[in-house]
Image (cartoon, rainbow, N blue to C red; front, top):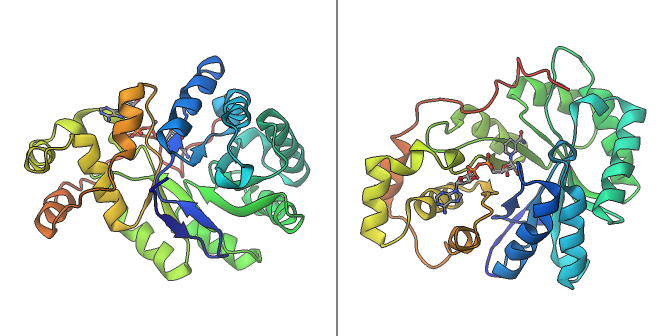
Length: 276
Ligand code: NAD
C-alpha cells in the first residue's frame, strides 16, 4: 500500500489513512472491510460499541494478509470503564476480532464526571506491558483530561482520536498534542459527508485539481499531519478516499481550507457526553 506511516511516540508505525466502520452493521462489515483491504487500506478503526468487531475480524482473517501488515484499532466502551471491567472488555473485543493482539486500543470517551478514566487507563497500561496491545491511547479527550492522565499514569497516550474537519480544526488540542508527543487522529474527517463537501471553496479546489471534494478534504488532513479514517460502504468511494497520494494541495489551497474553521462540532461535546 502507498499510505505513508505516522511514527507514534513509542516507535510503532500507524498508516496515516485508514478505514472507519462506525454505523456499518456487523453483517455488512465483512464485505466492507474486505473491499477496503483490497483497495489497499491497511488500518481499520472499529469499536466495541459499533458491534462490528466480528465482521471486521472475519474480513481480516479472510484477506490472507499477514497479521503484521494490518493495523487494527478498537475502543473500550463507556459502560466498561474501570480496571477489572476494562480487562474483561478487552478480552471480549479480542475474541470477537479473532486476534491475539490489537495495534491500538482507545478509551472511547473521557466521561469526566464519572472519574474512571485513570483506573481504566491503568488497565490499558497492564495490557500494553503484557504485549497484548502495541500502542494505547484515548479518544475525545480535552487537554485538561490528558493533563490529568499524563500526571497520574506512566505511559503518555500514543494517539487522541477527536472530531476534526475543516469546520472544527481543533487548534488548541493539536498544539497540546504536539507539545506532548501525542498523534492527532481525526474522526468524521469528511464532516460526515454532508455540507462540508459542498462548500464553494472546497468545490473550487477540487475543480482546480480535477479531484473530488472528499479527496481535497482528505489531502488537507494529510498535509496538516493528522491521521484520518474516512468511512464509506460504497466501493467506488472506498477507492476514491485512498486515492489521495498522487497530488498535493498548494499553500493557497491550504489557506483557503484553514479559513473555513468555525469551531463547530457535529458530534457530542466530550465534557457533557455521558451515555452507556
Ligand atoms: P466521515 O467524515 O468519514 O464521513 C462518512 C460519510 O461521508 C459516509 O457515510 C458517506 O455518507 C460520506 N462519504 C464518504 N466518502 C465519500 C466520498 N468520497 N464522497 C462523498 N461522500 C462520502 O464520518 P464518520 O463515519 O463519522 O467518521 C469516520 C470514522 O471515524 C468512523 O467510521 C469511526 O471509525 C470514527 N469515529 C469515531 C468516533 C469517536 O468517538 N471516536 C466518532 C465518530 C466516528
